[in-house]
Structure formats: structure tokens, C-alpha cells
Amino acid sequence: GAGVSQSPSNKVTEKGKDVELRCDPISGHTALYWYRQSLGQGLEFLIYFQGNSAPDKSGLPSDRFSAERTGGSVSTLTIQRTQQEDSAVYLCASSLKENSLEKLFFGSGTQLSVL
Amino acid sequence: ILNVEQSPQSLHVQEGDSTNFTCSFPSSNFYALHWYRWETAKSPEALFVMTLNGDEKKKGRISATLNTKEGYSYLYIKGSQPEDSATYLCAPYNTGFQKLVFGTGTRLLVSP
Image (cartoon, each protein chain N blue to C red):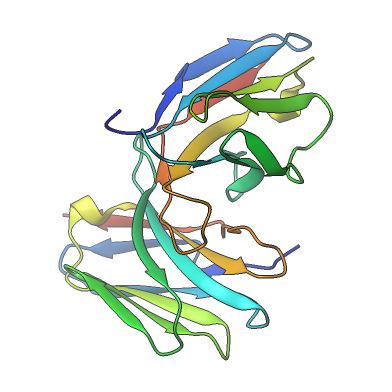
């Protein structure tokens, strides 16, 4: 695709419900990243994928968070039993390869609100 | 936790003013520094990736310098325009953490 696509753009859910966020990276980009920005905070690293594997899951805040990537393309971030503190903008980014010199291309994010 | 500090937190200037912000980071195990611009309702967009001490990058009216020995980078905007209004994020890559760690950003507002 032309850019990184995320869906939904907005999600309002009730506390305790599960949500699934989707990211479609730029075609050919092997590295995919998930970040989130809570109100007043910086971009917080969650997880990254190189191909379909996730070498670094260290940023996932709790075991309620999981992510997968299939076919080296689309990724889904799942949050189970959502809590109010999960409210944030969830950003996905991709790069040509996992390399600190490669620029990240970001999607427009999913604004998650947990009531 | 890698400590990345950006200052000021926010800045309000008039059209035509030149401005600059600072990104501070640990100098040990430094490998690269990224700058991104994040306009409201848009996606963050890469400005620069810098690696060498003393390096200077330029893109139009925006330029950045890097001091890896003391652990800071400056971002300059010459003759600010309203369309420069955005949050500017820096993110160093440290070989110890092996991931980009973003600062909280400098929010710039340029009034016409």
C-alpha cells in the first residue's frame, strides 16, 4: 500500500471488553513496530516484529496485551479485559528492515478510549 | 530506562521567528538519533536520522546538529511558518536498549 494503514481509527469500549487493533504496513517492509502514547506521555514502545517473529516483546505492559503478525504483513494487537489505563493512541510503524538507521513510517493511529 | 529529555515542552512563536529545541540523551552506547515531526491528526513523519558526532542535516528551513560525546541534538527552524506547528520528537537508538526510545516531544505553535 501507499502508507501504513491502521484500523479502526477510533475505538470506544467498555472496561473488561477485548479489543483488536489492526496494522497494515507498507508493502515490502519487514520490520513492524507498535507504540502507544498515553495522555501527557511520550511514545512508549510495545513490541516489534521482524518478519513474523517478535524478538522484543519487552514493552508489552501486561499479559493482557498480545500481538501477532502473519504472512510478514498485517499485524494485530489484542488487548484483553481492557482497563481505563489502556486508553491511549496506539501507533503502528514499519520500516524496510529492522535497523536503527532506517526511518520509521507511521500509521495515523488508533485512539482507544476505555470507559 | 533510557532517559531522553526534550526541551522546551512547548513553544509559541510568531511567523518568521527562528527557533530551536533540544534533545538530551545518554552518550554511552549511542548509535543513532531520529527526529520526527507529528502534526495534529496526522502520522509522525521522519525528518532526520543522524549517527556521526558533529553531523548536521538540513531539510528546507529545518536543520539538526548532533553531539554524541555530550549527548544532545539541536533542531533549528529558520523563519517559522504556521505549517511548522507540530510536535517534534527525538528518539535515540542505544546499543544497550536496542530500540528507539522516544522523548515526550516539543510542541511548537507558530502564529500568523
